[in-house]
Image (tube, rainbow, N blue to C red):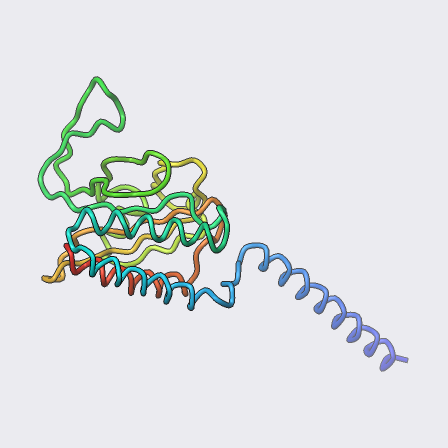
Amino acid sequence: MSAKIELKSFLFGCAVGAAACSFYSSQIQQFVKPAPPDRAKFWEQVLDSAKVLLEKGNEKVMYTANISALIYSELNGKYGKESCNWCGFYFLKNDGIDDLTESTVFVKEITEKCMILGPFQGKPACTIIPFSKGVIGAACRSKEIQLVPDVHKFPGHIACDSASNSEIVIPIFDSQHNLAAVLDIDSPVLNGFCDIDQIGLQKLCALVSTVL
């Protein structure tokens, strides 16, 4: 009798465990968005287009303007408008600059390093971002890529566009390996970017670094 009870308990435990695992997996899938199977090939094609644009002109503003337009249009054209709602560059500015982000009357000077807005696609954006603020600031301080699945959970996030829910920022370095710019891309969906995007964008930013 005891053996039968133990067997029933064991089978019941297995059933409960399987149900729990199934529920957990379903919940994880709601937050982890797998990359489309053609995502790597997509970035290869974008990189090829970026190389062609570089052959046509290597001036910084001209080239970064074309690259931001290329990424924005290709992402939205291939994967729909939910893939990207903002794409652009910020350039390093070492000297002090007036901060108008909090008031148009009372101006305070930013003495720390900051990034200033460059060419972009999307809604009007924050013009000045200090190293101490936001996802871009974190990328500048750490000199590492910031892949943020939910910007609302990121400490000090700057909401330039309220539609943005996820973000990826790629630091870009000059020939002396000094930080010179960042590429910032926002998505209106949570977990809008993946490791494949990171790899593709790194290769793209290596091209951009040649014009800085």
